[in-house]
Image 1: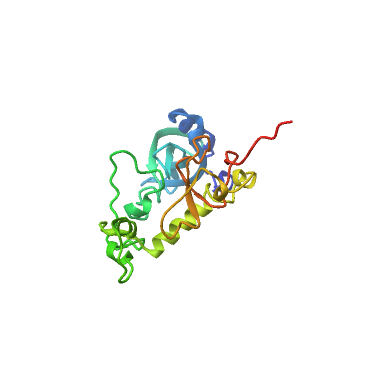
Image 2: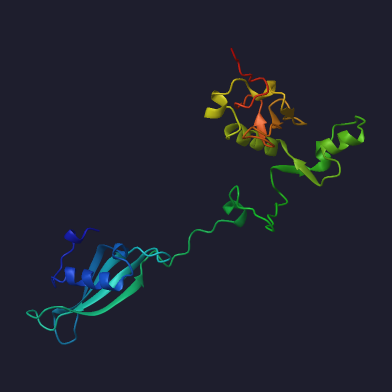
Length: 234
């Protein structure tokens, strides 16, 4: 609320603001006037004490207020400062809405030694045996590829979410480096197709000179380090 819209019966707004500025570590940490409240004394119908609240812009004190208490002995007397304190606002003591730990994590949050448990009902995963084909006979390499020996493998949902994320990211086709590349990754000698159902859409870059070296790239991604990007000389 603007200070111009609040009636100042004591005419002490500038005095109160100056007191708050003197108490604050930095001048910019005293903001706009929030409100003025008046207290009447027991032996008078006239207000003799007023509290001026200003916004407080301090780290770790979100929603707090500078409270400057001002007193006037008589109507004709000058206002004097009684106290300057920080007080919590109405919303400053409210805990934020609870967000589960797994929903607070962002890409890049996991560091050395961090453990991120995966819930038993994670829709991105299915039991390893669920990925095996029907009655086909498989060799050991095929067993591993399909997931035998692992407790869980990617579900269709997990695979689709990964594909959408990779394709829409920096190593998909919709970015400046791909759009200015001489040729797409699927025609590059450094492109290694990945195994499984995503083979036709993604691979891994093996060019040390590429910004995507050792990263999953889409077949229609590209960069200037394409194996067939030859320099034409006269």
